[in-house]
Length: 102
Length: 334
Image (cartoon, rainbow over all chains, first blue to last red):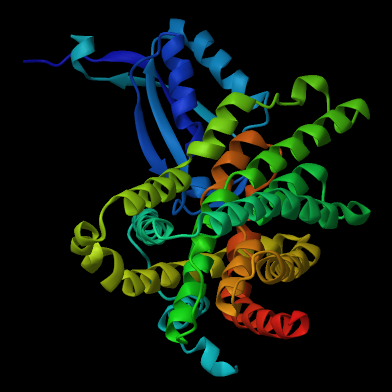
């Protein structure tokens, strides 16, 4: 049996762990309901984050979106970036294999 | 009181953690372990405080709460003024840092209790109630100072209106009063106060007998994390901040001794605990609120100051210093 894949936009958002529930809530409001969250640590514009304590932790939010959802995503990102939050967002075209493709 | 003041397992484990970092040891705690240990320590101290509260003199308890709130509001304003002196530190970073110094470090407070118990010094337990009350006012003051600074910067044109984040007071105030550490402390205190002592006794192996061992583990990790944080100052602008991280706890500790002895009538042991509450800087409750409420501030500064400078200073020097200061001041006012 051959497995059919489909294309999607892979979005990775690196943010302060305190922003996680707020970003997810805002994404849900614009119809983006599926996501995966990873704990993250590292160093960037806002210094080094060890991941050991709540105020010192980052998360990586992984989303797979359709092209038509990108404007909604940009609005959500703009909301936080315009308020000075250190949000880094990577977007790439990927091929995925999942039940939703079949 | 000399070097023997440091010969307490908890303090020695802290120093071991610092050494581990400086010799580049691969010693590392599993992810999330310090969060778990923090919850355990807050729960254990909350239960102890609650059990004592059940037997407390209501008048002294109310006075303690009053002075805790006063200290929580006044200390960050003093800190902000020192940081802004001659524009040494920008107003947004000054607001975020000063909020940390008005709040408390439960780890330092528990180390002070370990010091008193090891030295067999009597102390009042009202400072445990004060610890709960001091978590939130400083957060509010920090947010107010940041909001005022933002308005000032907008008026002077240094910050464009579209760049200026609006302070979301509702969610931030909710976080100030319901953040994890406040909730666990208040909840454990309530449970400790209402549960009859004979029912509490079944918990003692968990909350009393292993307590000091868990505190040693916590301080071992704090030693590693604190020493790692010092690297933040290598990137410049550190001398004034490091000086602040030492001067501010001395000012706060001195105010704490005066309040405890002159206004609350505490013994030297109780005065040490109030001094440590006033001298310590938060690294659990305040950083998440400041990261969201004051995103313009650099988290490296307040985390490095709290964990890399003030925490070690208080653990190694502050605790014996404030205890001796309390004895001296008691003699002075007697």
